[in-house]
Amino acid sequence: MKVNIEGDEYALLYSIIKAGNHKRIKNILVQFHDFIPNHKELKKEIEVELLKTHDKVFSYEFIWEHWKLRE
Image 1 (tube, rainbow, N blue to C red):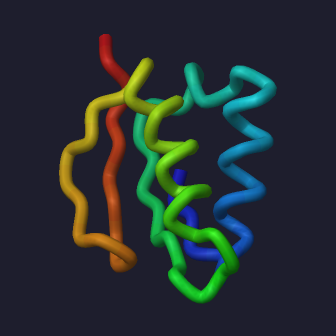
Image 2 (spheres, rainbow, N blue to C red; image 1 turned 90 degrees about the vertical axis):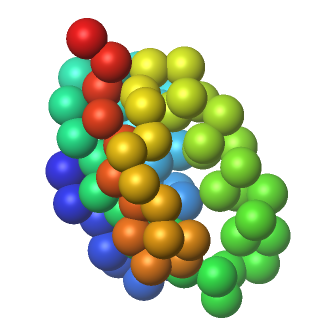
Image 3 (spheres, one colour; image 1 turned 45 degrees about the vertical axis):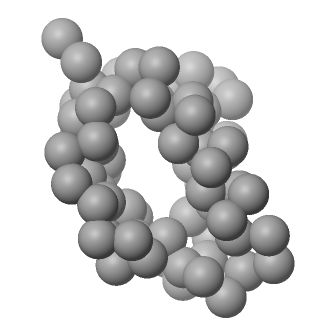
């Protein structure tokens, strides 16, 4: 899944995680944007949840991050 939706990535990923659907996504490539209020806190909340099921392959903060589902 590739996500670059100009700030709406926070709501999208939160929704996917809340529904438990992130456990079905093998690769997540996401660009987080830093012009959203509370972006650091929102990003941290998403990272905490993704770290339960995925490994962070790489991170160029606020450019691109790649998360891979653990097998």
